[in-house]
Length: 354
Ligand SMILES: [Mn+2]
Image 1 (cartoon, protein in one colour):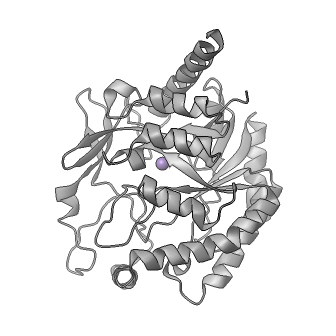
Image 2: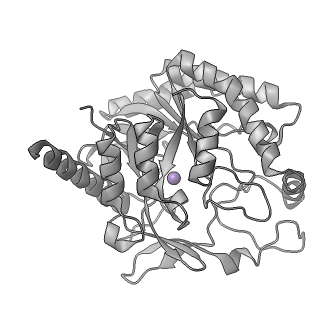
């Protein structure tokens, strides 16, 4: 049986974590990265893509997953300029495919990407992690210009006025409008991905519920079913992010891992453990006993259903005094990668012995 391919996110030459370090993580196969110096909606330079590929291959690794090619807000809002942005998107698919990329991760979240209230919450063992407490989110109103409160993770390229403008455009939209705009996008993009033999893998909304009254739709099993039917083609698939979906008790991660891998629609997996709380959640170490998710059962569900796509440890804690990009240090993600390798080996050998 084909094996899953272990991968690791890297933010390019500016990343404190180097490719040489990533290469030393046992079993590492693929580097997950993107061209980060181009605004959303623009076409990536072929030379930038080629440069990434060369650096990664020189380090003995593969460049097969892009995370992310961002979707311009005009596409999500269904504005007139969306056709041009979709054409640019298709061109980016062609360009990364030509460089050997097999899988593209993206999301369809209005304005605010992942949302947390604190990036350095101190856990019991002295490590720090990203957390989300609802009462802190409730104190922030992005439409109040006198409010200087912002949350980490937000796009700082917006001025306060621009943010108010785009938020109010979304607030006038229903979830059905957003579904319609997603369908419009997929119907144009998936045929290009199919032609280029690239798998598109949507990332769920993080967290998987509405914030500030903005519509969010990639949030649950019911909605993922609907998403996959919008364009019923294997190239239209998902990034199963266990932390994004698993921060809601309503999502049964083991069931979803089984169902969507059996359908052949999971192309990329983000493995992260979270502790679900009454008022939100905390990101925790990958080990099952450190959080609410059963990482063994999720991996087993993937293995049992023939998953052979890409998998990466998602956000790690900051440990051993490491500093850097919250969630994306080297040490805890490397521990996570090693844990995932261990789970997979044990599941595989247990299966073969039966
Ligand atoms: Mn994720």
